Image 1: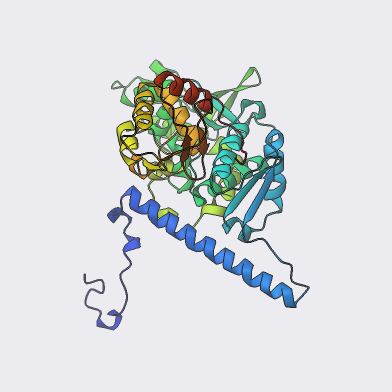
Image 2: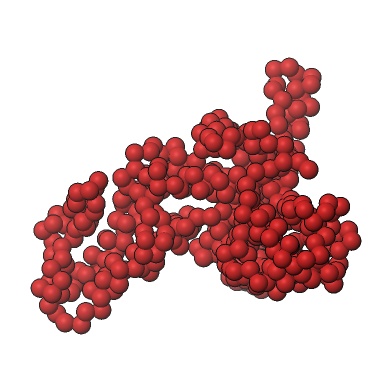
Length: 416
């Protein structure tokens, strides 16, 4: 490759392949991002160790933990997390995250962290906070410009999303693709409006596709938007003097652009800015810019491309079990007979998420090991290691009953 175009004096300039994102698929980009995160974690740990060594000889230097520790109560998970994260220095966000649930005996090797992200995002996105608006047609959420919460909570959600990516954990976020476009500084479009608000999006498309010249008379629109405000309706101008500006054939594209801009940018600017700042405090960097919005979305929330036979094929066995062991054979018979929702519950029970990593089902390695307990015991999951302790059941119906009983009670940790 002649990158110098004949300029021999620049012949020593190296070619960096990472400046050409199109040569990487989503899996390769994910590997790059995870490798970058591991290196940053190691640097943060090394810095903490150096500081701790220095503190032995210089009492004025404070010793620090090489990990970011979150101690939270289940009943106050948002408040406890906010209290810790507000006091956290930027460098500490780069440390490996360890979560401790008060009153629970568990060592966080990954599983406790997974449940933390699941529970705190479920709580933060709860309608009781009024931070996000739920759109029934699309089953998606977007920032609510009517919230009474201050920007600190939106900043926290951004931090949580960044921490999840940085610590290789899938989180359950029902945002449209527009969120990931904005995180990557790309402009939302009419397609994003169609995803979030299908009826409105179709109406806008009909306006653009209308072939006649009498757009103004047919649609009777001006450059305004009508929004709900605590039971009442309120008219907002999309542009200066929008109420006096009629939509016609010449300016209808500008109207649609202004409408999309209001929904995704103008109406929620301060809220998204807080979210954006929190996210990039943890997960910013050049590697993230390699991603396309749909790739970033898949990495954050995983996907639902389930291949249950692939899951069985990739499962490993320990102890007395092997693929043809009678208990293992009836386990997979029972599993494949479960409805989709129960299979997803099983994934949640065993891995801490009911979605598939961006790297696909083949990257989801499950391990099943035998236990010494009798058939009266339930299966036990170790979410840190995707490990299932499965008693040696001999009857199919017993295994089915015990498995369903276990996956229906999938919250909480203890040492066994």
